[in-house]
Image (cartoon, rainbow, N blue to C red):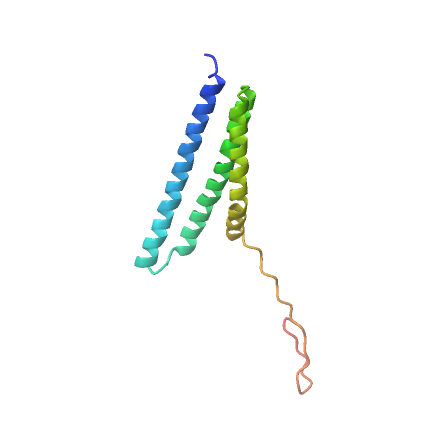
Length: 135
């Protein structure tokens, strides 16, 4: 069986990319509704868990939004579909410009930096007491 022709491959990849974007967007919206319901019924008992799930979906949405057009552009250029490749390359650049700030903020929220440890300074107390915390 021969592989599909380049136009067929581009169409199939485009449909798969759009369906994946719709599915991830629907799951992200559903997580938002779950957060709303939890806030109003359980007074926010699961907010951290739901926020993590929403951030993971948003990061996946951003990566899929950029990765799909890149893959489709590569297939289009490999199949000598020059203008289709150019259109999907421009689409990938536009989505990348929109997704990078969003993905960066989402990544920082998923992986917060470690807090700076506090340093204790030994201070002499009145009366000659020089006991320091920790020894």
